[in-house]
Image 1 (cartoon, rainbow, N blue to C red):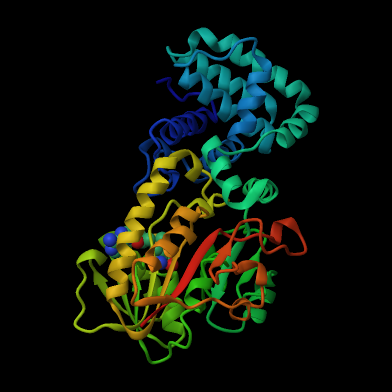
Image 2: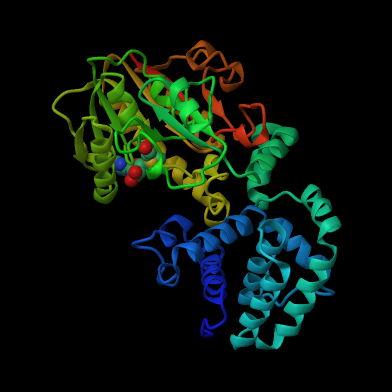
Length: 442
Ligand SMILES: C[S@@+](CC[C@H](N)C(=O)[O-])C[C@H]1O[C@@H](n2cnc3c(N)ncnc32)[C@H](O)[C@@H]1O
């Protein structure tokens, strides 16, 4: 590993190391870029360089296929199959040259220095220089051409999206994945007032939206007072499908970090929040404390959770492939595989069975997740209902979600994709991909 002597080199080395961890070892980015528990090479950087590393990685992953195509055009023959580090160095440099406000000369010089200092890439240093300088010369015309010719996602994902949504909708989803997503807030009350204070808008679904943030969320007004919490507009929909929960005993299963627990508590429910991860439950407790909200917190695996009494309403927001959150987490498509989708669908099917046992007769069960894949959504619930005679589908109506008919499938499922919710500008548009179904216990 080369010593990080030149200014800016440590950040590029960390970015290259983390990119390798994502695409080779399928390690999620969030954990590695955690300020306290993240990757040591990341934690060794100052705040400015950490921000640069995150920006490089987000751009590199969001446009991975475009960058690959850009490199391929410049080479007479492909890079050696085992030249992983060389490939990562090029991707890190091109993320800066094509998508960030970094001068080409700085990105190229640091990439060459990196290549020279690493025994695995030393002999390719002049290739790095030639490829990057060549791209720098004609990127103005090459980038738009390659962006429109390339689908920035692994082939398996494109294939599954086309099967589920058709080619045009898949293109719209992939286009949305390339954009920096807005930031959404769920507010306890006075959405219009908070939108005005933040310089944002109120979405038809009630969330407050900001196109971007120039400071930490914790520096915004209302944070310390617990007036709002960050929650994607789509993630705020499932709790709204629980009906009038005021005064009711409600279970929020798989609850951390607690966005939905908070919504249910604000709506007046007596919430029991169940979460398997002790650390994540701690985070949920901290979040609720800031918001001045209360819930019974249960540290348990849902599959062994045996409450003394059943609940009038149950929300199961199950762990899933998270393919609906690619705008915010572009690593998802490179850390998950097609086999993971099937595995996670099985886990969710089992959790749904356990959740169903916790619902009183006549009670409501809402199942949701942030996957775009029907295997984890529509198909799973249809199969579950076919083999569970004491539950029936309670179709969701557009009037429950701001009259947005496009969010409801013909079967009465909630289905959002990042291509939905067009607003006045692209920056203010879109939402996470979410699925929800509402079932009734007979
Ligand atoms: C998609 S996240 C939930 C997000 C949360 N509902 C919210 O709105 O903030 C899924 C959560 O399920 C938890 N989980 C996974 N398997 C579980 C199980 N068997 N029992 C309880 N919780 C589980 C995970 O630790 C994770 O926190």
